[in-house]
Length: 510
Image (cartoon, rainbow, N blue to C red):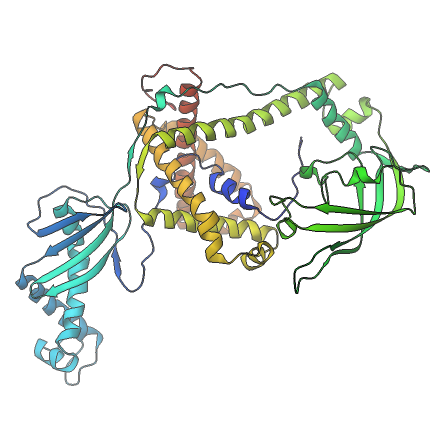
């Protein structure tokens, strides 16, 4: 049973933050890959598998932005060996008269292409192969792709790398956090309101033959113009638009409250054919961003007034709604549905506040590349959400009178930083609390998801060995992440509500 019908509106600044938080209070760091290369420097993403001593001359400087500058010097004869390999590579790719591909000698390649070209190719090969040794020698754990910033010299070979460091999180005393957990109970009035709304959805509209009253369905024609348009701005907002409103319905989630909260109530007392002029100044945080801070004058003509004849609350009605045995059975189901919905909303807010408090009490250090990755993730999702509303980013920015750089810096970047810091802190809490996944539970969940996918008509075209393996891997990673994330949130909730003592948990999912 659907209790709330959501309407599509243009995303606002608050929704950008909500988008960044959506299902993401917890760990997303484990899913990150290296950042994209930034022209013109080369980047290298390496994860050394073993700790071994590398005899290299390195000089490491830690920067304030949680990156390391590493200057490394190699032996001169090493570059000479790579120059020979580079010449052979050039010989294979080039057409050298008188020689088969790859067979031209070094001196011929040097004469044709020059020492600088060979040296450049040699440096690329050398850096690709030696980068992991550089990280090991400098005792650096990278968080994302590093980059070669400067070739200081080639005699001897001396390079400077910039490497983003693995984030560091020092948790505050999160185990001491206590927060009252008291979801609001569902009232009888709320249950009755749901029932009334359900009856309204099956109501018939009958001519009222009187002025409009609360609860009536009023058909109107409406026009709206800005009272003080900016230079070059079209003052017309709406022109002779035919619509209908239900007086008393101000819930924007169900389509009420348009074109502003309390609008429909202004029609009380009007009869068919009567007109009324209304003015409204929109708040700065109005969901209609193109009207924020502006005043609109509306001209309204009532075309008809009808009262809603609701169906009787009897056995026939409850059978239309669902398979209920009685009206009380339906009321109980509605109450349970409302309680689950309210609890989910309360939990989201409750856990969001607790996680924010943990973040505030913790010290979190990370390189800027990770924020850039989060920005890209949020923008990709934001563009997808806009596309679902048949809108693109350019149109959205035009409506809000923003340019893209301003939008990213003022709204997306803060949301990305908040999301990243939450993710890092959540990861650390999971480690501190020794939370692990139950492999059997994970496998069972993945199997169920695959079974559901197999029921889809379009699944057959993906049903080959290679595609199936890819789909299974993707589902496994996503499911594991969500399960671990939820387990960490459950543990945080248990600690903050005082349900458990402060000692670490053995496992939340075992």
